[in-house]
Length: 233
Image (tube, rainbow, N blue to C red; front, side, top):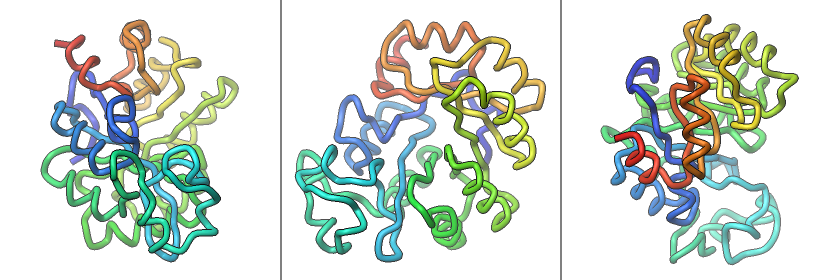
């Protein structure tokens, strides 16, 4: 299953359901699924050979711990409170939760995560997974290792928009995902002309959604997905 043409406007739970529940937790992912998100996005790093679901390279912002990830042992990290008693999940736990319920967008954040994700997905299968990153060379690694995984190219700078489209075409990506700040109708037209989709980030207010729709985006990442879904009904 690919993202191409699945939904009229795809609402993606950002970091699970970051505006409602602790981000990048099983509780947040479950919340986004319950709200009806057809896709949920998470972030991954590698620690002690395992893929862990967390956005930052430090634990300070999202847990009750302090310090950089690489200074922790895996068992120490798993003892931290990631919010409301939640643990930092393993990728496999999120894959299991999403299987048969929604697509999973895995954003590569840490070094070595490209190789590690592909290895994990060899046993899980790629059918409901999309791999995304701002590190385009990591996405190249994914494509070299796997010819069928869906890939999304992330871009945050206006001057890189055309380069992002070229990179996405080279990788046979399913989408190019720009920041709302640089999203435009002209950009969406260019991406659509290459038979790819546009998912923009991050919708937090009604005006953000209106802008995304007016530009012709195919979906958005949302911290409060239920509000966006209600607006679309």
